[in-house]
Length: 156
Ligand code: SF4
Ligand code: SF4
Image (cartoon, rainbow, N blue to C red):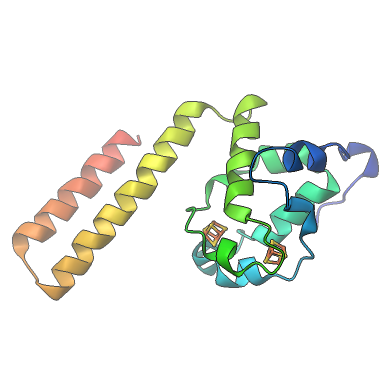
């Protein structure tokens, strides 16, 4: 495990987050782990851990958090939002962390827009694949394959 050096921690970070709209309950987190347990991204990606991200942010690991790929993995499904006993509103905190990452030069706005488009695309593909399971059709399969290929090209 990586060593945490006190002198590298930014004590202001948690206040910078908590004063943003939607993030006021951020420091109420008592690391119960419910968010991680219900998160569909954590289920498939063992590096993704909302509880850990909040802990790192409260500790003041500003650069590690804002430069991390992990903050872009959340699909904003709000499952954690509904279950958090402290009403931390993690999905909104993620939005704040992404805004800060862009403002502080760790990412650009265009990437944020692409990820939002990707989330919509994934839902669209899912709906079409479910429809194809219920009513198999070669046309539908072709449509999905074409959509995925076009998306891969767009993301090259
Ligand atoms: S569910 Fe809420 S209180 Fe529990 S770890 Fe997640 S954010 Fe913190
Ligand atoms: S909003 Fe993000 S962190 Fe929360 S459960 Fe959904 S994917 Fe996981």
